[in-house]
Image 1 (cartoon, helix red, strand yellow):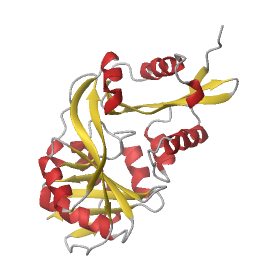
Image 2: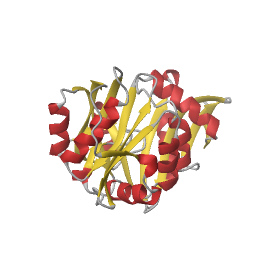
Image 3: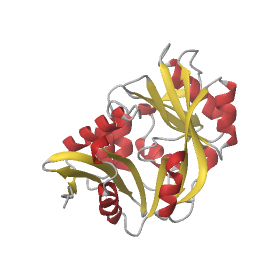
Length: 279
């Protein structure tokens, strides 16, 4: 009889192992993603170990407002096809009991997640570009905007409260953030962070396409000549216009799936997803 792996909650250091697995899969995580992800829910990361050696990881992060998100679900190559992944999956999903759970699935795994109770709601795509250009005068550095305003805007665009994660995300080394003000009110904000390969933009949240364009320009000019990536959701047609106008190239696609129906967020303000791993 083949022994099953032991499953436990990750330590902060274990998340580094999950990031290494993600990098091997070609997911190109951000250089500070481990620290930021762990801040979102330290009880929401799980590792499967066989004889003390890690063979699988998963994140099942519980946000405020009974919303959860699953990501970083990876088994090492030698641990696949043995049913161990399903054991890890079932263990992690218990952490999200009572939540509407979301995930971003590569299209070839869509049927697998459908069998686990998820329904597809829309397509997302990752686009690639190269930094440069000129910075518009309308933008301000995000550190000069009150954090409470940023968190309140984020809550319009994301299904759960995530202030601990957001604070870590904005303060991570090498990260740049910009906002646009409409009088005294925040009209949008965007963040770009360094990755093993280039940079990723996310989130990019804005009242409309004009604000999103200014934020996009500020973010991309901050990394001149560097490769960057932006993850766009299909329901926001203005986001599609932005990537087309700027000549970005689609590199791969995912589908956003939920167990409890699509949450009430303003998708027209979502011009760039924060991360495919944690929503």
